[in-house]
Image 1 (cartoon, rainbow, N blue to C red):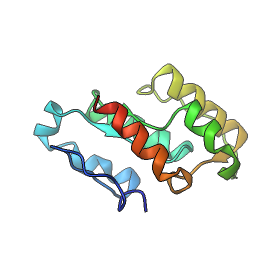
Image 2 (image 1 turned 180 degrees about the vertical axis):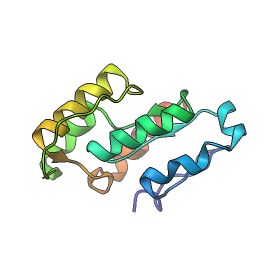
Image 3 (image 1 turned 90 degrees about the vertical axis):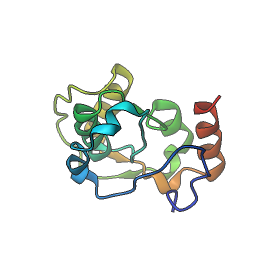
Image 4 (image 1 turned 120 degrees about the horizontal axis):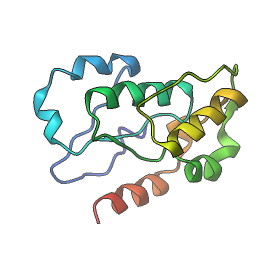
Length: 128
C-alpha cells in the first residue's frame, strides 16, 4: 500500500518488488550515478536485502529503517522466529544494531504499519 500512496517526487521513481531479486538490477549501470534510497521492512529479510542491494550500489541510503521508526511503531510489530544474526558487511552501525535486535528478538515491523504522515514527513526531509 505504501508504494501505491508514495507521494510524487520530482525526478524520482520507485521500484517495488520481490525482495531478494534485487540482483536483477545490478547490471543497470546508470543506477551507479543515482541517489538511491531503500526502504524495506524492519526485519531480518529487510536488512539482508539492503545489504545485498548495497553490494551493487554502495551509495544506497536506507530510510525509515532505524531505531526511531521502530520505536514509533513498535506496537505494530509482530513476533516471528528469532535467529542468529549473520555478518552483513554492507550495513551501517545503526542498521546493524537494529538488525541484530530484530534477529535475536524475533521482531518484524512491516512497512504497511508505518503511517502515511510519517512516510511523507521523512521523504520531505530527504528533499530539503
